[in-house]
Image (tube, rainbow, N blue to C red; front, top):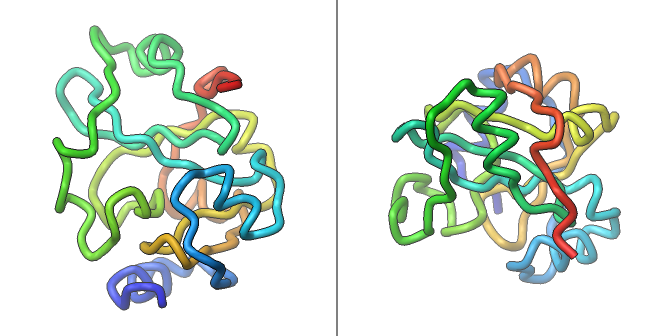
Length: 156
C-alpha cells in the first residue's frame, strides 16, 4: 500500500498515477520484471551530493549515474554518490531504497534525458511492493525535474 503521505502529495500536486502491486522486489531490474515492463521505463532514483547538497539523480534500471555528466550539467565542483546509511530516515515514510523521485522530500531532481523522453515511466511507490505508473511529461512539469543528457550510463 502506498504510504498515505505520498498519495496525498501526488493528489495535491495533480500528478495522476496508476498504482500496481507486485511481489517484493528490491533490485531495480527485479522491480522491472515484477512490473512486466522494460528496465528502460523504470525511474530509479539515486541519492547524490551536488556540492554538498543532497539531490536525486534518476536513471533507468539498466543504468548507473554518470556523476561527471551531472557535475558538468549542474555546474558543480563535486558530485558524488551518497551511501544509504547517510540518508536513512530522510525519505520517511518510505522503505529504504523505495523512495519515489518526487518533490515531497525537498530535493532537486535530475533525470537522464533519454528517460525523460519516454511517454510514461514506472517508479516505486514507497515500498518494495508498490509501483506508480506516471505520464513522464506531467511528472517533469509537476516536480520541476531537470533533464541531463548522458546522466545514465549502461550498467552491464
